[in-house]
Length: 168
Picture 1: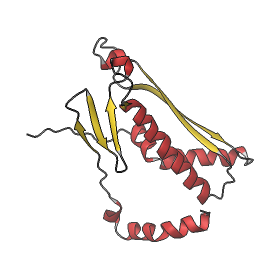
Picture 2: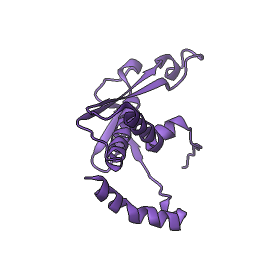
Picture 3: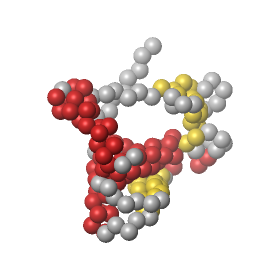
């Protein structure tokens, strides 16, 4: 897809959202069912069933997906799609590219054995490996815009309002 095709595809959406901002507000949903045989949650992905379980560092078998890995995978997916869309829109000459995310966890926090250890990632690093001859200022712009428009990055970076409820 080139910049012209991308802009043509997005133009009616942008016009509709400018005309009526409420049309741009979409609620995404995820659903999971607890496994009755093991400590796992079966997450419906829309394409398949993903079974998430304990990380081996917390006693898991390693056979199930780790939700921390899934968070990093969501960041990589979103950042990769956003980078590609921004590169296309900017007519940025990009050959092969890879996206990598890594994060540091202290499992003492989630296991409840050290109150000073945080539950969750202490640090997340997002890295892009770009095959391009573009000048550094265009690369910097590409990365800045990717960061700005990546939904998962911005959600992690700017904590959203969270609520939790339970029903019977």
